[in-house]
Amino acid sequence: MAEPVERDQPERAYAPVEPQRIAKLLARAGIASRREIERMIEQRRIAIDGVAVETPATILTSLKGLTVDGRPVRAPSGARLFLFHKPAGVLTAATDPAGRPTIYDRLPKGLPRLMPVGRLDLNTEGLLLLTNDGEFKRQLELPSSGVERSYRARVFGEISQEQLEELIHGVEIDGMRYGPIDANLERRTGRNGWVEMKLTEGKNREVRRVLEHLGLQVSRLIRTAYGPFVLGDMAVGAVIEIHPSDLAAYRKTLK
Image 1 (cartoon, helix red, strand yellow):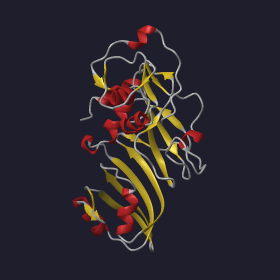
Image 2 (cartoon, helix red, strand yellow; image 1 turned 90 degrees about the vertical axis):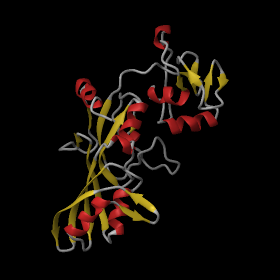
Image 3 (cartoon, helix red, strand yellow; image 1 turned 60 degrees about the horizontal axis):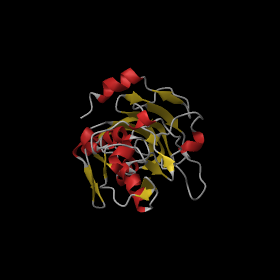
Image 4 (cartoon, one colour; image 1 turned 90 degrees about the horizontal axis):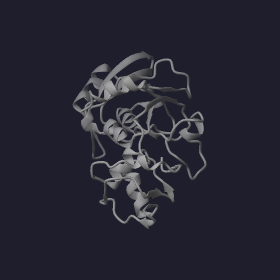
């Protein structure tokens, strides 16, 4: 989310940190993802003591004097993680030029600035993780971290369990290689059915593209889990914060 709203902080908020590239430091402070911060630097939106930063390779040891869109950057608080039951029909984005609703139009007021962990397509619903910590976000998203995502898809078409089991070896579609997917035919009535899929890569539109490659039409797609965090019976639009002690314990298990 690249719309920082900051207030001046006392001097003690700018305690020295280990030298880090500016993009990493700002991501840790929850300003935006590293990639988004690099774009903001290109747009000359980030400055140190009033002088625009020219390169994301800039090394810093403090946030003192650092501003985004003219507003001082606040020192990062501890990482927080929220579960959000995203409805279908809203974008996982800060804004939309076409004026379509985004997740930030649906989130309750009073939450800290939060960034989505990965994305869900406009018409995909279900569990979306939100965090205030850009580095934690990145860690959860990286395929190398091996964090499993689970989905349920309502499909129409002919498919067998044997065909779905072949996905455990991965599949290539139009030159794009997708890693192993654990897929199971949950139930079927005629040519209608539900397929459960578990994967760790989370590439753009991966689930839909793989199912369509198998000749299936997807009429509904729900993310039911991300790592150990599950959608369960959360109401659509509901938000739940993970307890700090549970979050700290989980972070110790990440690669």
